[in-house]
Amino acid sequence: GENVEQHPSTLSVQEGDSAVIKCTYSDSASNYFPWYKQELGKRPQLIIDIRSNVGEKKDQRIAVTLNKTAKHFSLHITETQPEDSAVYFCAARRNYGQNFVFGPGTRLSVLP
Amino acid sequence: DAMVIQNPRYQVTQFGKPVTLSCSQTLNHNVMYWYQQKSSQAPKLLFHYYDKDFNNEADTPDNFQSRRPNTSFCFLDIRSPGLGDAAMYLCATSRDTGGTTIQETQYFGPGTRLLVL
Image (cartoon, rainbow over all chains, first blue to last red; front, top):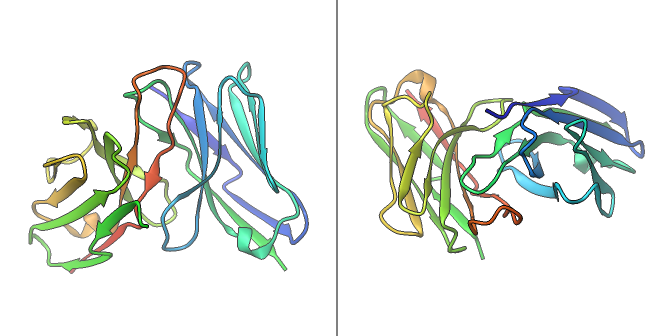
């Protein structure tokens, strides 16, 4: 089955700097990769996703890149702000009927 | 305009006393999931319904059951809660078109935090 690894497990950056979180997956048939942000005590919220027919996607300060050959995808946050502090989860999924497999999460702290 | 609703938001139960958590959705999604999430960990899938078809994860304890009486509602029953079952329980939904090219987003409810005394 699918296995998703995520690094680093914790990340501290200064406000205004960039943050990068990387995930690797094992199943080459996976074709959908969402990223979730979860603040303390709240639900995971989708912040960006990418499908396997696209190499990069950007939404304001957030971008995701996908390397299908290497089976990894990364979340990039630029100009970080204190409100970006949260736990970020990546996930991967194959075709319909398959489950989302989550990475273990990255705790991002943005220091003012 | 809440899309995935969970009730209650907080549930306190006693060791061994059955408890039911509920989830409803206004998205008309055909897939509903139940996850268990413990502190600082990723959500762990317990089971999901694909339409009416129930799919149990291999490592989900028998203590956990689920019901989906219609498209909008799904329930999680914990028959005999133990201390180790204290966690956040997240319901999620997605729409599966049956195709291989379009993958739909998974939406989470706010969660029910279960405390076992």
